[in-house]
Image (cartoon, rainbow, N blue to C red; front, side, top):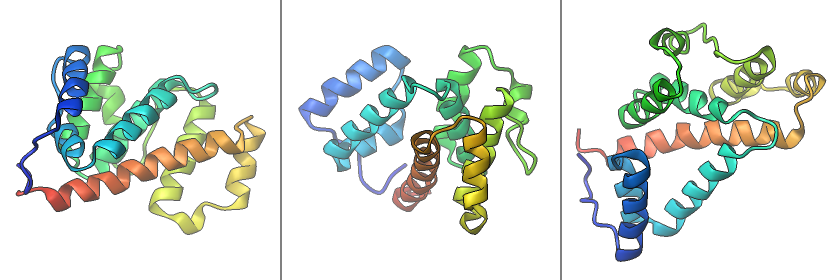
Length: 170
C-alpha cells in the first residue's frame, strides 16, 4: 500500500485506538501520517477539531470540501472516509454526485456555495482568486478568517493527496 510500512509509536497507537473507537476503523493514510510525523499528525487532528467547531462555517462544509477535492484528485482513502461521514449524516449519493465533475453544487445554502466556489478557484486557478472574489464573499458576511480557513483546508487536502500518492506503492 505505502512505501513505508506504518508503525506508529506508542503515543500514536493510543491516539489511533481512540480514532478507531470513534470511527469504527482507522484509515491507512492516518496510520502512515502518524508513523512518519506524529507531531504533524496531532496538528492535523487539532485542525479537524477546530474546523468541526468553526464559529461561522458549517462543519459539513469542510467534509463536503474534502470529499470534492479527494474526488477531483482520485484520493481514494479520503473519498471513502468522507463519503461515509456524509452518508451517515443523511446526505445522499445524489448530493455527492453533484460535487463531481465540472459543475459542482454544494448541498448547503448559497453563502456556503459561494465560499466553496472561491476555494475551488483558489486551489485550481489561483490567478482567478482575486480581491473581487474576496470582496464578494465579504458581502455575504464571510470574514477574512473564514475565507482563509476554507482556502487553507482545501489547499491542505490538495497537497496531502499528492504527498500520499508519492508514498503509495501503487
